[in-house]
Amino acid sequence: MTGISGQNAGFAQLPEAVRVLQRQLERLYLSRSELERELQELRATQPLMLTRPPRPSLLVRILMRISKRLRQRHCLDIIRQSELFDAVWYLKTYEDVRTAGMDPALHYLLNGASDLRNPGPYFDTEHYLTLYPDIRDNKMNPLFHYMIAGFNEKRSIRPNMPVIPDPAQDKRNV
Image (cartoon, rainbow, N blue to C red):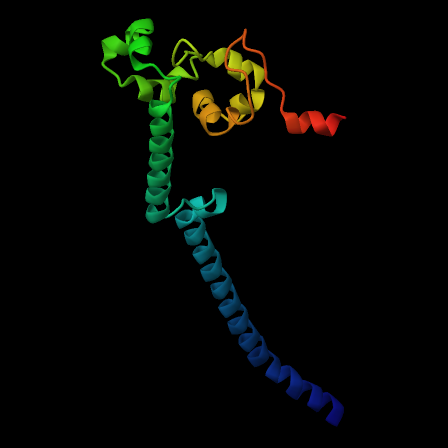
């Protein structure tokens, strides 16, 4: 009978073991509930971090704006100094610019070239962009490009002006 009485003693301890396991299970459920609640709070407060890249800092944005303005000012200076830019001719030819009271060089830099307007009688914007699509594709102002590179590359600036071959290119083709 000792076997049965030993089993009965084990059965007597079962209710206590069940209570211990139930408390552990309750703690696990509470922990799980707390973790799920924290996860929902994080998702609610951080949705933008999960869906879009971070914005540049204010300092970076300011520096980018300053850099853009400096590049624009440099382009504007080059255009103004060019003998191919004729402010008087530009204002006579494009009455809307004159009426608006805009600076003709600034207008050509910001809008005129993209509208295929000419900076003067000796430079054909549309011709230049048609002949050299790399300038158009890079959204570079055609007169600015001509002044910094196109002149040395002997690029054509008007339809009836022949493209002058590069002597170095001719030597390579021989």
